[in-house]
Length: 523
Image (tube, rainbow, N blue to C red; front, side):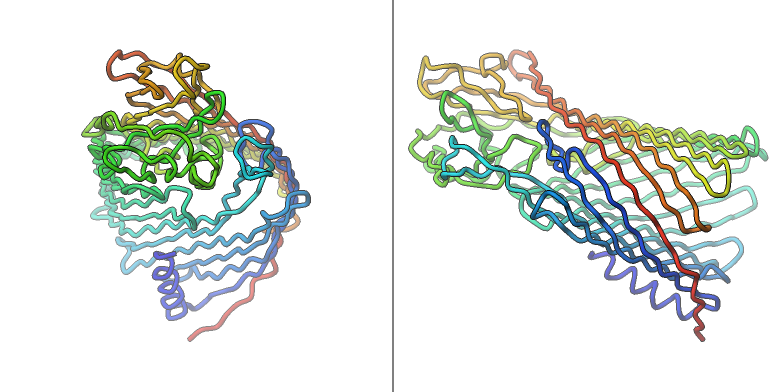
């Protein structure tokens, strides 16, 4: 929103002042869909059907030296069988390109979205955590905005250069999820070696900031050098690549101001544990006051409310003494970034395969991660009226540095049933974890963890065109994510593993209808 407030008004001011053949296009969009797992639950996913629809507006002018386009698509989604999660969507984008000369182009584009992030929590019927629970569904809004500015210049017909800067924000309108922002810049030049080959090189810089709802923010910087090679095997067969080493500068400690506070879980009957947010606890004379701690009432991966132990009736438990500090992490490391793609076109069919390795803030573990994305996209249009699309994605996100972990897990009493730790929705016997050491009513697990998210996504869509820009469609999506967290004990160097996954299917039928363009006259 912050970037949009400046960029889109500029587009609105500049565009009319230079427009000679501007036009407005009104339209309407709608779809009905069925989702087998609306809340991305690891088991017993909530099935739901919904209808979503709304208007659309496009303003554009691509004539002359100044070309521009703006689009706004608000919509509302209503669910048939789940109450409390109906919500609005706001999607907008704009782009502008100005050519002061035949050799120079200045450009800008902005993409904005304000969409819901749906969550489910479980409330106790009687106010105690051990009683029967019922689901409580809710919406949280998330704002995303990406702005890109740049300039391209051709020094000669063979020498081309491009310099750009971009910024992005991910802002959850609540205090549960982690916000993030990034600032990126790059500069590169290419040389036309032959009619079929273009080579070059460049450098880039990315600075990403993670802002958890509690605890200090952390910043990771990436410095990249890369080479470029584009080759045309034929007019319909193209290969593009840029890749090179990347230096990662991670924070030395992810939560510096809470470096002396361990993460721990709370014993709840028979040794079962609930995760606790360590930064929320009060510390008096080196002792953690459990009753003041925020307790996660759902496994990791859900959307837990922050309730204190006192509110859950658990304040009678003993306090746990501090016994050490988090291990340090971070520093500098060396990896690589890459962007490779191959495109082949036939008469009625096109196929693109790509691989991208870069940094991402969509980690869910309060730090930036390295993301590997494999994508396959095919489009077949046997006639002007029919189009078949297929998209396959495999995305793997890996923490760029070990995330420090320090657990203190409580037992009901010495010699009682083995305690258990809730990790990614799975109850793990403390006795199977490395580094667990009994200390009266508490045991400690000290070490670090590497987290990996693997996402598999397959989408097929059939479009039936009624005109050039009006069509009906049917779409099917298969979506699966696996989460793997490997714990390593700092003392014994032994490891343990925690995993979880979700699966969902989405079937949608919709339409996109655009009215004839309305030509606008501006002086």
